[in-house]
Length: 285
Length: 288
Image 1 (tube, each protein chain N blue to C red):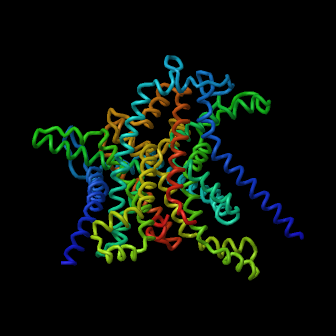
Image 2: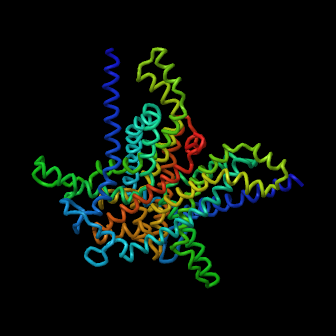
Image 3: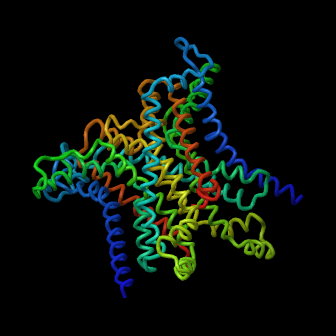
């Protein structure tokens, strides 16, 4: 009896702790998102009434995000970079999964650790090391052949390479986990029924991997979209959204249009994350 | 014939991996180390030497910043584990079947929200004209607005906030795979809650704990936005020094040396952590 009341009190305290944690988790996101709807020139209290101006208004001083050219351009570049990173990293992630699940070669463990490594290298260092190498090559070519390789200077391609360098580890791990669950007797059955290796891959193995590939692609897109540290060093004149927002915050100071972008991104990335979780869930369980 | 095809497909699979790792990870890092060993002796004239590293040792501000970044990152990692473990345990073991999925989803969805937006949210809450300060003045608890930003406590809270989900998610997956019978057996054999936690749950969850700690520590030590936005100009974070050398002073040689020092320092901390807990990189980070 005594122990059960004690247990009840403990559980109650535990639940209160959980509630406090989720409030802590939500508070800054709610603050960043909700001021987008405040009819004021500053993202601060007091509440001046509800408005959608910070999304749709087309004139200063309350220029909404969907009419703000620079923010829209940032969104566009982020989207382009995200799609490229996502496609590239899912492709290499898939070949990596086959390599490490099916392949048999010397020093496999060593190479596996090499594959994980990019995930634990600080993003800033990935950024500067790729910047240094690209500039070295570009300078060398320029000195020797008098040829200017524009694509090796900071810009979209370098940002894509920088993000791809560590996002691929994430996609590889996600797809490897799925491929490990694959029952190879399915492939054997298809082969026995007369299918060629390419047909088996296309009709049996890849469809099995598809949920993991889509989920990995979504996660890659999200990681690319929100990345700042690596991008910061590789960015040229085409700034993706996070860099544009940071510049705006540091130079102009914050106006609720940044809250509107935050709201848009929180909802957008939340939905994409939700989709990636749902896709990966086993239909059987 | 058969073995030729096997070998060919192995080579085809190995090629993307090798290109990725060699061109984007190994060569750039070697290039960074080589660059850091170049000393500027005159304009556009360089020679091999350890000058950039000697400068680092001779200037206390530099190594103080590195030590400060390291020690604060360890503190953040420890706090994230301390706060996150009970959350993960609740989600994996105590919550009912339905609420478990919902709670886990609540943790997964904000996982990919940008650091920038999180820090922006904290700024709106904590600055002098922010929500908390004006709320406290409105209810009469304080007379004058308080500035909560630009101090170390705020930076630590902000960093814990940014990284804690990367601690919780691998912990939930690890604890989820644990058989409840193990915990019950512990109680039946007369263990109290603390003994069961220390002797059964923690050892079982060790790979998840170590994995979460490594990722969180590296993310914290390498973070740039949170310390700068919440700590202000004098947050003294080492990544800020790297940025300063690279972009502001255009001193790439010394920036590369700083980059290598940060990488070496964090790797040593992780290596010590793996040694102390008897884990390896392959059975921790790779599993999550």
